[in-house]
Each structure stands twice: as structure tokens, then as C-alpha cells.
Amino acid sequence: MVLEITNDTYEKEVKQSDIPIIVDFWAGWCGPCKMMGPVFEEISEDYEGKLKFAKVNVEKEQEVAGQAGVMGIPCLIVFKDGKEFDRIVGYSPKEQLKEKIDAILEKI
Image (tube, rainbow, N blue to C red; front, side, top):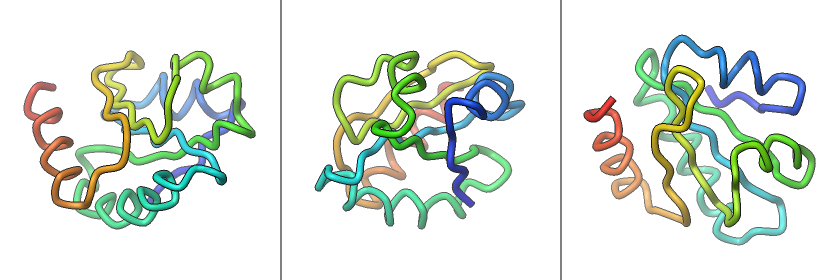
């Protein structure tokens, strides 16, 4: 399951999350974001209980994108204990994305 994060839910869902969370910052006009979306949704099931998955539409939730320092999209940011732990910028195919996430989780 992938949560939709808004300016109002960011603090609770991301900053106060008791497990690490990966947030996909995206926009509707972004081609690579449209390719990343289904991959992100699909792999979210593989990490249940280990990593929460969420999305932020940077057009609608500019405050959150600004707080996170997002400059390019798609941008996946892993937060642990409310702080940025790592980020993945740009599109990655499914297997490559899983490898990157697994490598990040090993460091947490």
C-alpha cells in the first residue's frame, strides 16, 4: 500500500513514522515519474513491515517538496526517525530500484 502524503499529513506520516519510509516525489507532467509510479506501487508489497511507501505530488504539496529539498523528480527519499537517510533520483527499472532500496536498508 502506498500512502498519499499532503502538507497536512507529512509531519505524522513521515517525521513521526516508527519504521523507515520511502517517499516518491512526483508530478503529473513528468514522464519518468509516470514510468516510476507503477514500479513503486508494485514493489511496495515486497517491503511490508520493513519500509513504508508514500507519494507526494510536488505540484499540489509544494511546502513538503520544499522542506525535503527536492530539486529534480522523480526523487525517492528514505526517511528514518524523521530525518532523511538517503535518496534515489531519476527513474529506475524494478530490479534496479529493489537493489538500491535493499542496499539502503542494509545501512539502516
